[in-house]
Image 1 (spheres, helix red, strand yellow):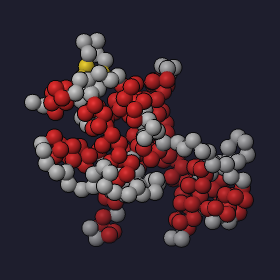
Image 2 (cartoon, rainbow, N blue to C red):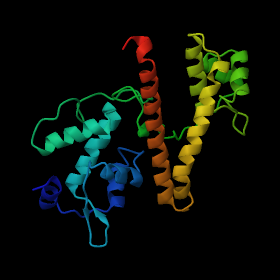
Image 3 (tube, rainbow, N blue to C red):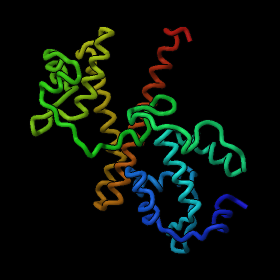
Image 4 (cartoon, rainbow, N blue to C red):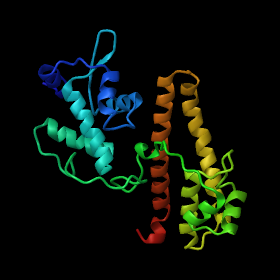
Length: 250
């Protein structure tokens, strides 16, 4: 009997996707319907389908989703590793590596099990950062000339209200770290150009979803953008590492 069949036999599949979301949201507030559909498309959960095609989840399905979401949040595990753990559990084996509930939660930052971000790391915080110029200089460790150059090259911009946001702080902090290696804002113009090209490319993917003008489509677009952003960072890191292999003697 398959995992899905065993689940159905032990617990009737009676919950809609909205009801499942309502159960998970208190513990995992960033979860969306598009996220649940994405996890299904990745083979991590297999809800039953009614004759009309509607998803129906069992208690075991919800427990499986909770396991996945906890592993991502508390251990920053990539889906590949979580899938391997679930496959082991399905076969009655003890999963290797960290499992849900057995570890402490680390700081929420751009990190994951392999040191690179996942889609969840690109969820926009509800608490928007609003900084004056003086506050940005102080928190990022910039000097006034550095910030002037960042603005000149389009790496940092003020919001319409005249303040700087969290993105400006992240960029500025990274620039300060790069400056320690002799890289100046003028050297970083290519990053702005590359980012703009990626934005244009990703807009081609999500614009049809946004034009549907319904909350579900917009949620799916937001989830897609987060996935694309995480994959983009991973691709960039892999290409840089491959390009530097000869320099590093690898």
